[in-house]
Amino acid sequence: MVGGRNKKLQSINSASLKYRHICANCNNNLTQKHDQSWDHFFSYLQNNFDSLSIGSKISRAKLFGRNAKNKEVFLQLYLLKIFGTLCSEHNIAADLKGMSLSIRNSIPYSGFYLGISKRLWLSHLKAVLGSPIHIERNPISGKIEIAIQMMIIDRWQFELIYVDPNYRVRKFPKCWNPLISNGFVIKNFEKR
Image 1: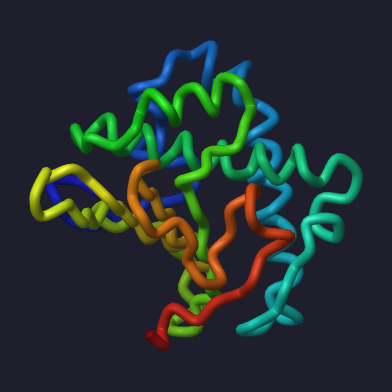
Image 2 (image 1 turned 90 degrees about the vertical axis):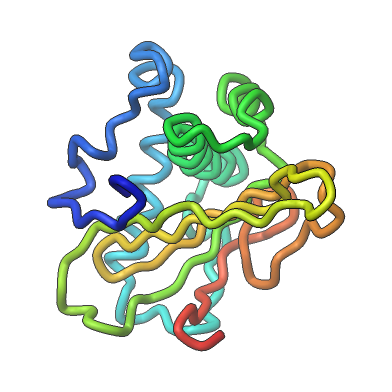
């Protein structure tokens, strides 16, 4: 997102996706396993696009094999790094301290979920897009309760969902969090 608007990027390696609010050591060394987990996950989705349908379930063991639980946590931390960096860059008052602790200590973050959907509309177009972060605040305190960013990468759509640790709703149907999910479910974002 640039200036409050969606921006089409040339690739996943676009300069617009580089992390300006994370130190080079953290991005290059500390989170390398997280990056590798994402690469493996996204390759699996791409290689199995035709066989995965709405409602398909992907077990973490099938996806990651040995050490599946750790690799699943690394995947969440990769996405948390993206989301936390965007929050930092746009001064969004999410729990950045808690996110940072999870990333540095390689432990799952309870308030972060992922939704996955095939992009059925214009799926022949290669795209990398990110939406603005949509925020719901507590009407009394003004504190962020939920923040969601939509991403489109090639033929896939992703929802990155942040939930404040003190917010009363903690589960989202068919959304993945390594603390409560045994795998991934392909959703249909176009049918809400």
